[in-house]
Amino acid sequence: MSPACIAIRHTCILSNHFVFRQSCRDKRQINRFFQSAGIEIPREIYKNEPEFPLFIKPFDGSLSADTFLVRSRDQLTHEQLSNPRFMFMEYIDKENYDEFTVDMYYDRNNNLKCIVPRKRMLVRAGEINKGLTCKNVIVEYLKDKLENIPGAVGCLTLQLFLHKTSNRIVAIEINPRFGGGFPLSYQAGANYPLWLINEYFLNQEISYTDGWENNLLMLRYDDEVIVHGYKN
Image (cartoon, rainbow, N blue to C red):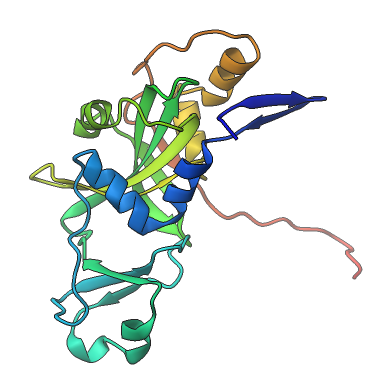
């Protein structure tokens, strides 16, 4: 099915192209995509000749499930070495790198219209608890590298690391959907839901914009709900 917004009674379905979605679900394929765009990825480690520390993750994983930081040979298990789903790569040390999620909007012609990097300052169970919008080197870098992605429409979330001193950028993955931290970008002024309505229902063109708020901080926290006289 081609990218489309299909109105069925009051339901809007926005779909990235099937081939692009499949590439995003397989981290091996998305690595090849990054390389074709001239974007650096974590260096591959050959499991028969391991270099430490190394990082292991499944090519089809999500939410940091089944990921392992291995610092020495004695920590490397037979199960890790024999699992065909596992990818072995250099460890990106968060002492030296900041982690970012980048909310990117693509119009119906697959052209990039907005880039909002969100620094992942505190993460729990794969979801952001503390984040900060940052107008930094990432914006122009991705604008140059990913100006058009065939098959991409609407919101994409790109995960990457930015070195704290050298500005080395290392891309990890793309999710072809809104991410859990998108409310921060929305509050900063990147109103992707409105742009979808304007583009697909009102047939309006979307212009490129970087008019979102820089250094906007979002904090999430747990709260208690007290119910008196509750009976199970």
